[in-house]
Amino acid sequence: MRWTVHTEREIHDTPWVRLRSLDVEQPDGTRTDYHVVRLRDVAVTAAVDEGADGGRRVLMMWRHRFVTDTWAWELPMGLVEDGEEPARAAARELEEETGWRPGTLRELVYAEPAAGITDARHFVFRTDDAARAGDPTERNESDRLEWIPLSRIGGMIARREIVSSATLVGVMALLLDVGTAAG
Image (cartoon, rainbow, N blue to C red; front, side, top):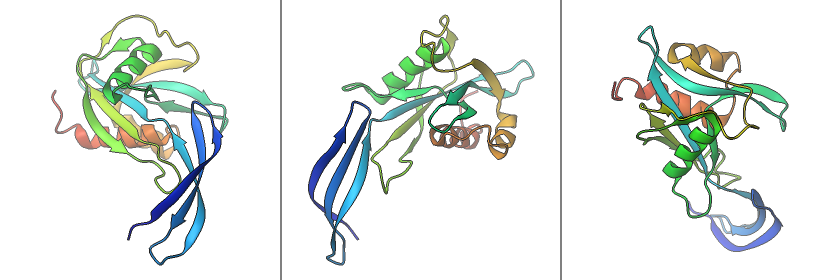
């Protein structure tokens, strides 16, 4: 069953968020006003390495999100700029936020976190060969960086130490991917 959009009207517009009112027709013929939040795409990188003990680890950032006033671990991520490919944005954000540069990137998972209300798209990539390039250039992103053993991820999710939907999708896909990935 497909809904039909007849018109779309701007309610609010910024470089980050666009609120729209859509005149939609539902499959049963009912027409209604439906509000949609249009957001920029997000690119995320799961940088994976092997720890001294031989276990796999992922690079994460401890950060505060003022909107929800919460502290949690997140994967490096950021907005895809106009004309930029998601993989390029993922590489750029990883280096800006952590100081690590990916050698190769491959798409790990794609997600639409709230498709009933927003057109947000999250592109999550994986790199297994990131190299330290220097200090992070983005100073407002996190309090600290840490290579987290993948064996700890499940407990961190249960304790709500990982709550960002992009990070949750990414680390869960990473846990499923570990057995099939190189290395």
